[in-house]
Length: 112
Length: 125
Image (tube, rainbow over all chains, first blue to last red; front, side, top):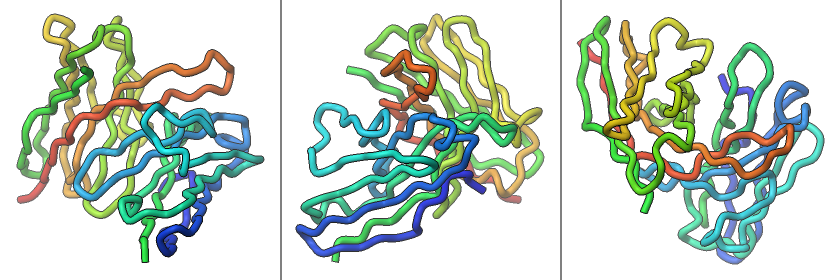
């Protein structure tokens, strides 16, 4: 079981804005550790989307944005497009004995 | 350009071992930590461990301690992940992923900028 919880699915019409939450605890996000986000298209390896809570690597559209507050982080996708339909994962670090690097449970984004 | 090329799919019987390779190119191999991440069919991502290609030091996820071994060969810029005592629950796609640093802050967390294409390991009798 992952220590970072995400909603299993979110959906939106083209052009809409959707947000994905990533809820942790005092041993990971709440401790201050940064959060990264990855996009995984079907049958492919994950791709880095957001790093250091809110930074976009070059080439990632500015429709994607990230934030962090308290024990949670969020990924927002504005102006939703058909090609955004994918699985999204948050990632952070956990200082407890359960592990070191941890991923969220994953969220499937469906474009209606 | 940076490339991580993994070995091909494997089918193993329960109790056997598997060794997956990840050959790096396009950058200085010893300058970046490498991680292994796996994904069971229809499931999420699970971090397995990390290896420092420079000195070979490793750290593994607690649940895999004693079964996983990560090594590297600097002469071929290749890292390896060996998993022993395989069980059906180990059926998954295994990825290698390069870690980059982005901040010197205390709470900076390694982030994975390049991933291998994945290697499917099937454990079945």
